[in-house]
Image (cartoon, rainbow over all chains, first blue to last red; front, top):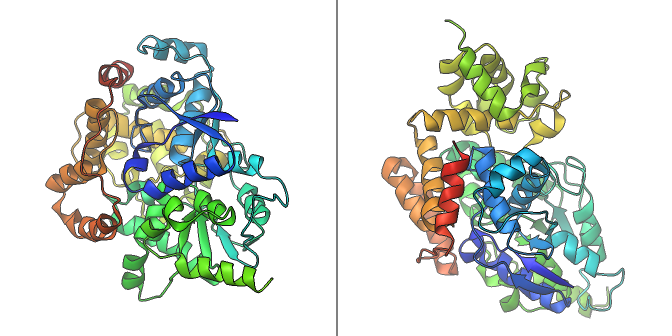
Length: 282
Length: 174
């Protein structure tokens, strides 16, 4: 399979391990990625004018005839919402009037969905089954909203992938609740309050690891975890992995390929547990 | 205060005419992760727009507490997109030159898209801290976390299609 790959701005900075693990997992699964040529920012959640946001997404989508894959839920949500708006003739005409390459339709996919499709049940490429690993499936907002492929409030695709990797999804009440990320710079207190709720909920659910599909969720739950622990006087200590990192571990890829050393809360003890359980024949 | 019909119609143009069908049920407020910090609530904000109360609708913290999580939007029984109302108000506020730390953040973000085509997080943070130095502690903590892991990009990437992106931002926001 051949897909156009839209890395998104964070792939160059805070989401480097998202980018590295996405490329590594796709390579391992025989999915060929062609990086979108001269791609631009999708506007994230900070472009208030809907038509401008649609135009920014359209420029990216017009750059290829292949289906477009991204590992970032913000990019994914923006591209999909724009594709829906661009079905209206008036919007499409307005947007195409300012584009060099004209938009004529696109198919947008998230890495999660691509990986799940590529992996069969009991796939022999899963050389490190994640047996007994308790995983909190954290969807956040934008994988499923406003126009994702999955139920906007009660999705189950992450659980499906977790099970396919032979791990155990935990019951996680806040799985589609916002992490606060989009407002963390100007509204620090509000954002931290809701991010902590999610970490606390994952801990109560007995999770050994939280899995995310969005670099902003990852930043809030992983890079900020230590600060949040200090502010609340509570120990969390749960590693937070991108779904591509978790899948990569099960495919037997190494820490370097998956960027595991770039995570703030080290997942290495968890990875060792996975290997120990495998050695014990669990 | 008199109703500002022009303002009301601008909101409806940007966020959709279905906003008129709001029954004030409060599902949006009940779904919102930051509702407890908002005043006015998101429900009340929609009412203010429909009453043409421009000043009250624009000058509040509510707009900037919205995380764009879209729970309100997928739950509204009338098919209204409350988040789109928030975006419309931000757009109106920004075009009217309303100044606040939150508006500044969005303006810097859009300026980077216009100038580079992409976001350079370090430069964005730096610009923001010039107008909101109170954010320095949080940014330092984040920097100390990310820098040793190689996750702060010091260079600014500029795409080739900057003129096209600038045109998208300028022409389509008219």
